[in-house]
Length: 571
Image (spheres, rainbow, N blue to C red):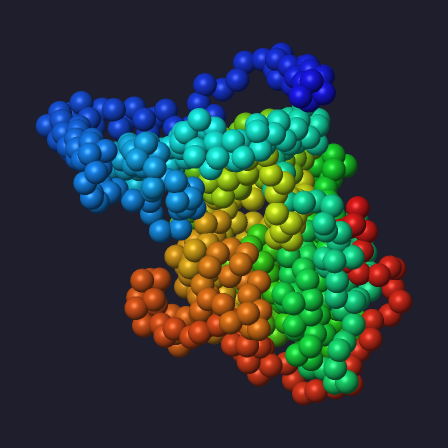
């Protein structure tokens, strides 16, 4: 234990050096003061409702206290409140079997419920402020869960007793290691990072880097069939993380599956920006990125047209590029466009909108002005806050309170392998899309001097979104079907932003929904949709193959520059 504390001292000094003289901090970094003020005023204006809220809370507590006393006397009782389905914090039997911990759990759940009920019933709140208050109340309640504290978590106490306190020492060691990994800043370990290596057991599909510039590398994958579809596929992945989420392991790689179906697949691998790329804008990602890659794909394959696939922000870029081509000429280079969990209309952008209001964007711009980019760790923190129980507190409990090592999980390794965002591009993206939603209005957004009108895009489009997506909610992505001017197929898959997309057919997991019509609202679409078991991949394959021309002899990639996945990933 002495060694642990000896290692902790220099880390504490680093922490103080980094944050002790950081200067004045914003009083309202989450821009929540106005919403809280309006909520307080709503309670003052309606004291009867405030009293009723308190009385309901008191009644629930009375019921809990009475049930606890009866249980202590040996009588059978029913819980006053139970955790929501999927809440894994209280799954240990001690939370139910031990009367003390059951009382602690239920008292916490009642308090969290009371907080959310007050917000839900408050009058005179705008939808945006109500959303903001619900989100931050949930963050606050999640942080104060009794499962996050050693003395109120029976699993932690049980493990400490079993190991004679050794688990707490190991937890302190894990905490020190994570502080060392973050150079004095806490960087919570989400997985066993030594268990994975891109190019070794991740990003494993054979291929070659056949082109590169300062913005991106272009990977062409080797064929697995004697014949391939004539029309190649170009993937435009997001540049918030590295592309290999689409090519993880052999048993879940979308790239490998497409290659096995007889497609020639190309992948853009974006460069990780540094200060030298501060002035790189959205138009550069379009012109030096996707348009250059498209021309290279057509030149390499000898085809006149290619399928395109955009994922998340890559899909937003793809939509803008298609509108640019429609205005400038060249739209016939693209035979189809597929949008993975893509927002084109940002009116319903979910919880991320809470982090993209004017004060927060201005603060990010000030930070980026100093560095030339937004540090990847900043984005990681934001995405972790969107699912704080899963991506923060579960690991605090496992790593630091239980003293266990995180489980090797390829998805969380990729999640932690994130990239920076160039200052100019990111400011344009946050303001133009999230704050002002300019892309949804024809001609309001300009890229490379061209007014962008999605209605002029006639390219056949396939949208795939997921029901539980917390980053690009499907009710928001569906709005894109109403903006494009060509034929659109919308498919909805089960699960979330990543697991719903990376869902190979062999697993037989989840389901997907289809509807031959695209009514004006997502609710109307959902009402008329039919459910189908399993992965959406074969449905998309059928849609693609109809537009892919005949079969031709397989194309082998040239030696090119280096083997896939390329140094833009490995570096």
